[in-house]
Amino acid sequence: MSNPRNGDTKPPCLPRNGLVKIPTQPNGLGSASITKGTPAVKNRLCQPSSVPAILSPALAHRSDLPIPSLASPLSLATLASVSSPPGASLVGLNASEGSEQPSPERLPGSPSERQLAVDEKILNRLFWYFSACEKCVLAQVCKAWRRVLYQPKFWVGLTPVLHTKELYNVLPSGEKEFVSLQGFAVRGFDGFCLVGVSDLDICEFIDNYPLSKKGVKSMSLKRSTITDAGLEVMLEQMQGVVRLELSGCNDFTEAGLWSSLNARITALSVSDCINVADDAIAAISQLLPNLTELNLQAYHVTDTALAYFTAKQGYTTHTLRLNSCWEITNHGVVNMVHSLPNLSVLSLSGCSKVTDDGVELVAENLRKLRSLDLSWCPRITDMALEYIACDLHKLEELVLDRCVRITDTGLSYLSTMSSLRSLYLRWCCQVQDFGLKHLLGMGSLRLLSLAGCPLLTTTGLSGLVQLQELEELELTNCPGATPELFKYFSQHLPCCMVIE
Image (cartoon, rainbow, N blue to C red; front, side, top):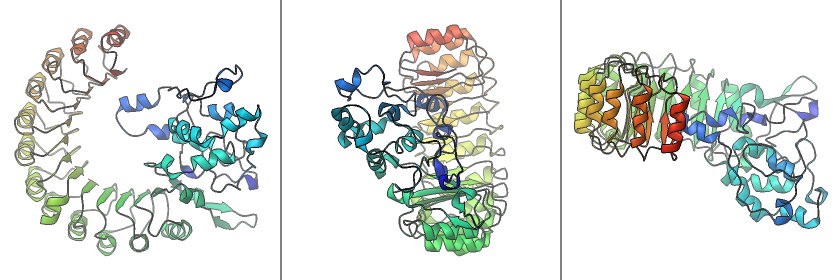
């Protein structure tokens, strides 16, 4: 962590304290800001976007001032002719920290231009068009900009990522001092991701973050050494936490879950935690009656665990993601569909022992499903798609990535699904041009991914222009996707974002 007072500096595009962990790319967006969503969504986030013309004629006609846009993270700072000092904190935990910020009176230009540059009504509209990384930079321009940008409304939905080494300042004496988190509190952050922390680090965080007791709703611990005792203290002290993620935490045990889980938790994600097995699911089912969402990646969970869910959870739980649960078979699917009949989102990604019979059970019993992920299920065939098409009439998203046994016949079944909006067929190596013809009548499709499908030709892909309502089309690593084809799409699918 950078501490200007100690002479340590960071590049000016790398915000302090982990809000955005990766330096800004040439397009002005930090890589950390595009880690979620489909490739098309990521691509859209990288597109330059002009700021609305709400500047005065005096500034608009200044040839020496660039037009602010997302293509440049420092464009507004340049507009005010003030840039962040190289050694300044870009997150700015307190207004007095780091280098002194200029006051409005010290900005160059005429008085009317200076007044415009700090007009809060204009700034409140303008700052919506910048990414989180850019806002961190812009908050260093002057106190007026910081005052506007530190309003909680500009940071809703963002989760600061704090690595353990960034939680402490090293004093001249060599001792460590926990950093001030006041700047995060001012912006009203109600969720944090802590990476590589220990029990002691978590206790220090609780003691030093003003909103920790009641104001933090979501906590994520990744690659951390938290123990049963630390988990118990955290959930006992942080009474507001309703969403909990534990990833790569190998020092807590199932006993720790039994002693710490609280009924207020409604969403739980556990992945790559080696001590999680069937008894952990028993603790979850008994202690979390209000659970609405469970994400689980656990290699040792078996079919038995999926029978533990209670009747209350059968009513409240709507999202279940079982990713790479290798021991789950069709018997586990039987237990799941009877225990959780109200699921609307289900992922069996990487559950390699699930077959067409398991999918049939899902289709017959979970009629409310809107999203189904069967990626990396190598035993799934066209028969499974027939079951899906016949029974899941509300399904809007279907993920079939790496289902290598799916053929054109399976796509013919899907063509009857009038509700399907998103279809992922990445690396389905048996899909051919004839199969694409079945999709051309699906007017509801908005997103189609054919990345890595090796048998599709330019001729077959060109027929996709009939899907005029398509918004996103992914053709990464498709041999048939030529430059000429992309040009053809740009002319005949002008409203569709095509991922090359």
